[in-house]
Length: 85
Image 1 (spheres, rainbow, N blue to C red):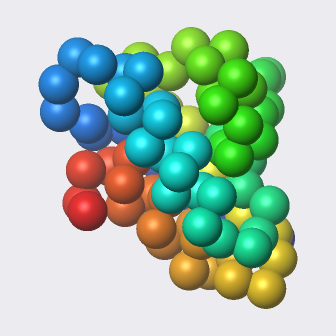
Image 2 (cartoon, helix red, strand yellow):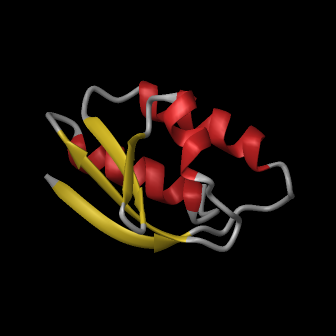
């Protein structure tokens, strides 16, 4: 399992749109991907789970991935959330 702590850096104020894009991106990977904010941890491939996380454009999160493509998945998800993509 790979983990990384990040700070969100997304443009715009439509967090629901960013979450939908994140779920689509996460679903392309074989690995299990989780996002944790505080003590709440959700599956990044679940739109309902991600919506309940209550992410904000300035949150700090822990992203974890486990599986055959965990390194690529972790890099892809963190690049998206930090605005590097």
